[in-house]
Length: 328
Image 1 (cartoon, rainbow, N blue to C red):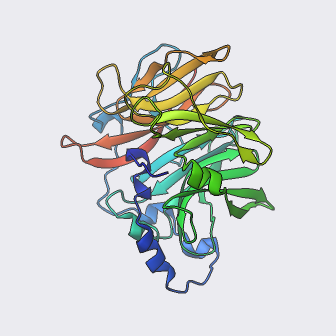
Image 2 (image 1 turned 120 degrees about the horizontal axis):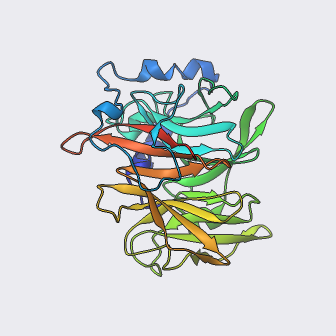
Image 3 (image 1 turned 180 degrees about the horizontal axis):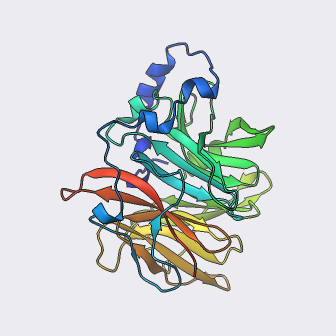
């Protein structure tokens, strides 16, 4: 996971800095003691953006969905919400949060609120998000993905194989525990980027800037055989191009691939794409949502949740929110 981009800016962390922090003894504390409310951690001068003040409103390029809107409920704040994942049944929502995009990662690791958060749907709305504690000491966690009761995530922490490693945690007795490194094959041999597992856990899709690709970052897939992951296979020139294709999501039935790529319709910044499978071949991607949109995740009803970053006229990032485009 050597390459980083605007969607994982928080993970630009130097291992030496983290190691330095680990030189101090830190007593484990209960979540309520180290997790002040998100709102309290957001700077007083932070600007909360909305569609009316947005210079680059997300643009929908198809009539299959309603126009994108900020995700209703208590998820979005004047801080940065990023890296969303929604469970197929639409009942659980995970995301990354940091209160101030201008604060360097080596300070975020100590603020007690930066990390992975989640909430549940009651059918009438979302619960107040709570932070998921995935370490006994210092760590910077993000890029969550849940497969049933297993949470996969990326983390900067002591004893990693590299700068950023993939980990797993298990939900049990009302909390996420038993976190473990996903192993040397994914974190060293393949050194994968942001990823998504198939619904049966047999395939892992990820962004990779391997030399045998088509240019930039490509999307690859590895199939699990026993306890090992087989050599990754490039998804091919229908999906991948000379530009970056990254942050894949695959539908529960395995027939739709969604990912982040550079807009080909003339809009600034990244865009959300969809490729539909025909037989064993992924079709030519269609640009679905443009204007600084990325990291798509869908429930089984086809509602698209994605990250939208807000910029000023000088392209300085102001904040980030989760948006949703509801399936018609």
